[in-house]
Length: 270
Image (cartoon, rainbow, N blue to C red; front, top):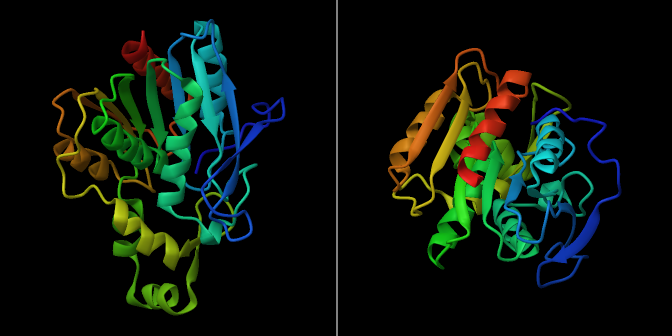
């Protein structure tokens, strides 16, 4: 979860409805987003993908928004359903919903070249998007920047780390309220776990020719640095760089971390 920056959302976001069903049953969701077009309608774009229970008001988003504006880059960010300003119930949401929303949001950038920047859960969503884009060409995608990527989060970082007692609560009650290092307990639902198994990447050979840059703190208590290291071997492309920060935590939001993030994106998108 990223720390919120109260100065990020100075203007009201726009909203778009995504999904084929109805708002009432959750198959259609009202999604909050912001899209800054940059210096021109052909400016390269940064597409931000937030972490689980985070939104587009985080410290990293605020920094990137200001930096992108200064560089003339476009920037697209949004809140997943059940998060931030978007509609939907977090206890009914799933990885498949968030992936569908992320894919639909790419329509806003048109034919611009872009970089996917994913934090934690957003790193997993970025990988899934890149895999889908590789099947259809994906020439616009110039690279992925993954910050503490929580790939296969629902299985590797949640289910496999649960005790039998906790698993039983998820199975029988449908939700377990897990203690958080940052705020109130957060829900891990049966829907989240079971639907997440449709999107696992642990089998490896994640396709895509776009370069991948991974930024990982070695003091991350949520996504161990070994998890990021294991991802390197799952990627089909050889153009992969893993940067480990010895004192870095999960948020990687220090001034030095943010400067490194900007340099990493700039090298891919310029």
